[in-house]
Length: 85
Image (cartoon, rainbow, N blue to C red; front, side, top):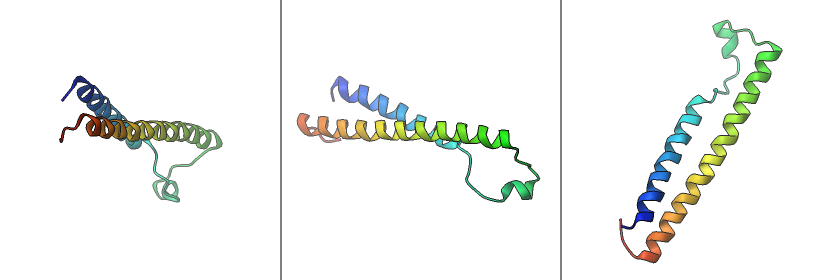
């Protein structure tokens, strides 16, 4: 295994941890839960939640795309070097 395997593997681990954290931070999309728990949504809280949720959703897509590209890069590297993991 070369140095690129370790570097790309480490970056892949960082991307996977980032995906997990960003997904955990997102709000659930369950309707009617606020009524049951007594939480009243105001106009400002709804817009704040949407902006944070859209921010987290955007970063989820970025991290997922990077994750996919890294997996492809590792597989191409493994194919051309010729080792088996």
